Image 1 (cartoon, rainbow, N blue to C red):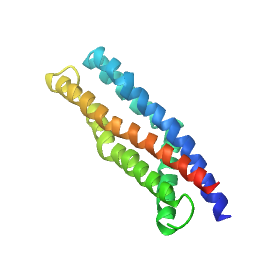
Image 2: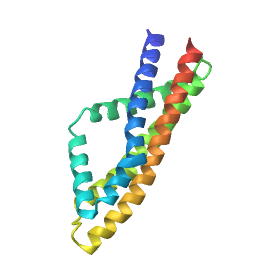
Image 3: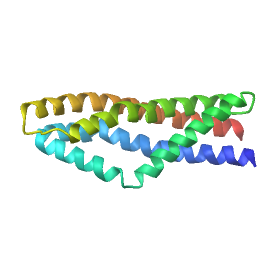
Image 4: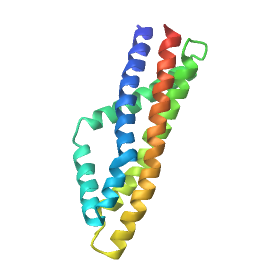
Length: 162
C-alpha cells in the first residue's frame, strides 16, 4: 500500500511538474517580453487579467496538489533515507516546494498584488510595471528551473524504485 502511494505521488508529481514547468517556461521565454513590448497599460491589463483568471482555473488544484505531493515526497524521503529513490524524492520535493511554491508565494504573488493595485497611467505605475517585468520574470526563471529539476529528480526516483 505505502509503496503504491509513493509511486502514485511520484507519477502525479512528474506530470504536474512538467505541466507547470511548461507554463512557467512560456512566461519566461516569450510572454513577459511580449507584454513588456505592448506598453505599460496594455501589459498591466493583460497580466492582471491572467492573474485573476488563473485563480479560478484548473491551475490552482494542480498548483496546490503538486506543492503538497512534493512536500510529502520530501518528508517521506527524509524519513526513509535507505529506501530506493528516497534521496531523489527528497531532493526533488525540497527543490520543488521551495523553488516553486515558496518563491511563488513569497515573490511572485506579492508583485502580482502590487501590480493589481497600481495605475499604469501614472509615472509611478509605469515605473512599477518596468520593475515588475524584470523582477517577476527573474523569480519566474527560478520557478521554471525548480520545476524542471524536480521533474528530473522524480523520474530518477521512479527509475530507482523500479
